[in-house]
Length: 357
Ligand code: NAD
Ligand code: MN
Image (cartoon, rainbow, N blue to C red; front, side, top):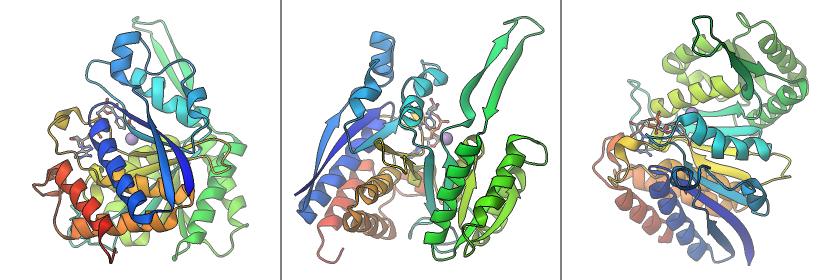
């Protein structure tokens, strides 16, 4: 029996609702498959812990996670705790501490789900956004001087290193190469930002020589938003900086129907540390506790986690089950249906048990 240790961190808002759904689907897959076991440990880290103790996770939190094979993460964010505390207190230290430098965000219009783009259906939009996840605009460098004074200055320094850009570029080219269209778009803002962004362009051209079979092009990020909306068929694999890919992938999620169906994997490609799998969305206070959070993003990222662990058959089965349930119209309100989180989860677990899935 193959065995994996999973650290579940449901955290805030709808995080616990979607992680519970994801764990239920993973259990159904374990039973159906019969040849692997997930040994899940759940951590109560997040905003509740912050209110009780003044910190989102214990000081040795990352150390506690090190021995796990993967981390299954919900969302952080609470109305009464500043966002920079929830983010920098839990999610970013894990991403950066474990050098999960490749953030992989697949986007596809699932059968039964409608894109807000007229005339765009499944097959017209099938992208993977690769987000640089270790440096750039989220390096955490900067400062404030003359606080509260009229002459106050705040800096937010984006740091790009040759090592950091080269490794994400290689990752993106390799991923593009593994997909049928072998197409990569490199996004920057190198017309206005002359240093780090021009370096991105130069390194892209260098790395491209290692992948002669990949067709690639460059886009400025503002024009990229237009291309995503006007000509989604022209894109396949996309690589961008930490901030720019963060923004583009929310747009991608919305174009594929909802943020509620958008997954993400924070990968350490060298496998020195555990990688982390989570839905893209946040804690969604507006729907917390209502039982209507869309669990599809979490199912999809559970499939990414299984793939990463080498359980590719179970990952594919999970995605077939999700696609069947979406095609059957069992959808939560964010994608135009009336189903609850539980309805969708039960239907996915049922599909996993079916003979022909
Ligand atoms: P959000 O993603 O939480 O919600 C945006 C909108 O999308 C809301 O209307 C919400 O109801 C809807 N939505 C999101 N996920 C959904 C789902 N699974 N099913 C149905 N509808 C869904 O973003 P926000 O409102 O900007 O942020 C709320 C909090 O989450 C903030 O504190 C923010 O900092 C945090 N946040 C955390 C993460 C993360 O943990 N990775 C990511 C983004 C935002
Ligand atoms: Mn985001």
